[in-house]
Image (tube, rainbow over all chains, first blue to last red):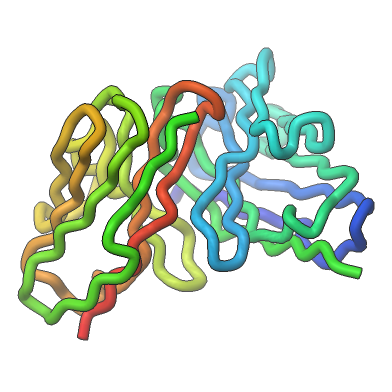
Amino acid sequence: QVHLVESGGGVVQPGGSLRLSCAASGFTFSNYGMHWVRRAPGKGLEWVAVKFYDGSRQYYADSVKGRFTISRDNSKNTLDLQMNSLRAEDTAVYYCARDQRSTYFDLWGQGTLVTVSS
Amino acid sequence: EIVLTQSPGTLSLSPGERATLSCRASQSVSSSYLAWYQQKPGQAPRLLIYGASSRATGIPDRFSGSGSGTDFTLTISRLEPEDSAVYSCQQYGGSPLYTFGQGTKLEIK
């Protein structure tokens, strides 16, 4: 069965760092681009970043550019998100999601909660 | 940036009725690049519709998508209690690469 499982969320102070991970199973991870998407409390979904299937390219939302870094290890079937200089507005549930045709997301994890608060 | 505006914000209907959810884009979106998702509390989002009108694997035919240009619609016929959820539209293209609507909350009375 195909699965994505996120981990690494928690409470962090403004200006702090956190590293999220997403473990994939049940499909050939190296064939798919992978994304991070987040939902802040009471808000809509917001795309955060994408890493191409082979790790060759990545793109970020302007709101996280220069602060977040997306990476992947195709030998371990994992996707990571290194988050630095965290702000209160980064508080959200973070989901990893599988890319389909570079246009939509056909598989999602359950999410991990990140709370940025002093 | 392409902004997606969904309406209504909340929709309250009875089992067996039909729900019509709207997603309006601030500029034209290719039909190939419009998708709909369902999310229930505490659960992962689930892909319902891609390419504006194609149902994802395992999605019942009660769910249908339509539209083009700037106006897209998700229709759920014969509502069931388990259809209670937040429904979001999403488009690909421009900057940022992907944007979502703010969501429509569907309540089944």
